[in-house]
Length: 199
Image (cartoon, rainbow, N blue to C red; front, side, top):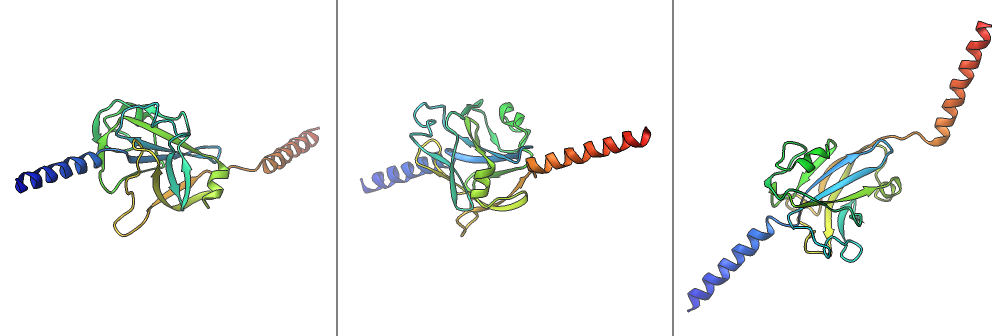
């Protein structure tokens, strides 16, 4: 009888481990926008859920340089439910491919492929980026995820022995409004000078 219990315990552990290896936030991608903001996208294995996709009630998101940023409420998009490897394009899910995440992607240490069921977004404003110590240009950023939520539970994105992965985030340099105004005045002045010279 002891052997039966041991066998059942081993089988239960195997099933739970296998499920954990395919669920939660297993893949992240990001894109920098022309306005100096950055969007982060996280894929979950789980199906759409009005409970767990409500981030106001069940927070989950990303951690950049030790600062937590929750996914945007209402940002969850359903995917095809296909299973395959992650990537920027060429994955089994056309909706994910269409995002064109050309700035970066990162899989968990547990899996590099799983089921594309849904993704959530965190739109990082310039104020968010400043709060995380991320400036214009190329930034080396420590990255992981957090969750108070079973569907978006955080896998370990960090290599062995580290608390977070290291990713590169590029932020587009957006000229300040005052700099744009000065440039416009300069161009206007050049145009007026050229007209005077022709006259």
